[in-house]
Amino acid sequence: AKRDGRDTYAIFDPSMYRSVLEEAQQRTEMERALEEQQFRVLYQPVVDMASQRVVGAEALVRWQHPVRGLLGPYEFIAGAEASGLIVPLGRWVLREACAQLAQWQRENAGAADLKMNVNLSARQFQYAGLVEDVTAAIADAGIASAALTLEITESMLMQDIDNAIETLHALRRLGVHLAIDDFGTGYSSLSYLKQLPVDVIKIDKSFVDQVETDSGDVALVDAVVGLGQALNMRTVAEGVETDGQWMTLRRIGCDQAQGYLFGRPGEASQVSRMLQAATDT
Ligand code: C2E
Ligand code: CA
Ligand code: CA
Ligand code: CA
Image (cartoon, rainbow, N blue to C red; front, side, top):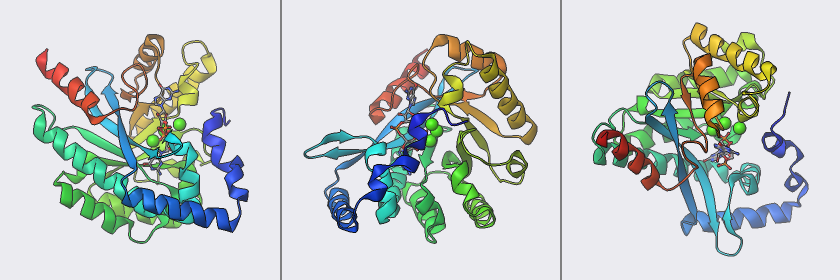
């Protein structure tokens, strides 16, 4: 069941009914924004359940719009997807995130195993130059390919499952890791999961929200964690906001978590501070 209204945004996006002219205008505006470096990447820490230490971060894009202020992805990703600008924008995010990871690894003792997660959009995932872009981003940043995890959603996989599996294998051959994002909100059949060369299952926030009080959500998260263990996939809970959720998820056996409890998406320095705090203790 789709309970996270924001995840269904794209389907009901009124911008889909915008005129061709408006779409062209937004593309031009976003192209200029990309040139003028109005986009920014924020990083949300990913924390290991057992050690309670930061083990990585997820890159989340923002648009510092000169007139409209700081825009979140729900305000421009759908438009970028429609116009195709998501391909160069996504490439920029990927390169920026890989470079940031290299910097964290250089500057922080004990951060050698730190990981970076980057979201891919549907169009980016279908783009023929994706593998080349990822290869170049890793090489130019000088990071290990296994330090990069690309996040894709179930619905992206289901659009053309055979092609999708081929792309996943090509990415996997590079050595990057793959995560299924927003797991549980799409329509994929479970039987697909074991065919997918995926390393990580990200449990959607909508299942985490009531995990303290709703026995149905406990059962669901428990089942997903069990599935992950059986298929040798790591499970990461997203949207963890309270100690109660954290403790429940830990009891269930979830491997890692992200959420406002540990840190909102923020400047790279937030992650640096967490890394330093961990080595200081
Ligand atoms: P997502 O991949 O599911 O990312 C998690 C979203 O949940 C982020 O929203 C994050 O800020 C938010 N979040 C994390 N922890 C909490 C929490 O404890 N409570 C609450 N209420 N929210 C939390 P954000 O940054 O607005 O991003 C929204 C979506 O936009 C992402 O969902 C992802 O699908 C997409 N997105 C973000 N950056 C990129 C990007 O660079 N490329 C592409 N293609 N999509 C992106
Ligand atoms: Ca994500
Ligand atoms: Ca997610
Ligand atoms: Ca989500």
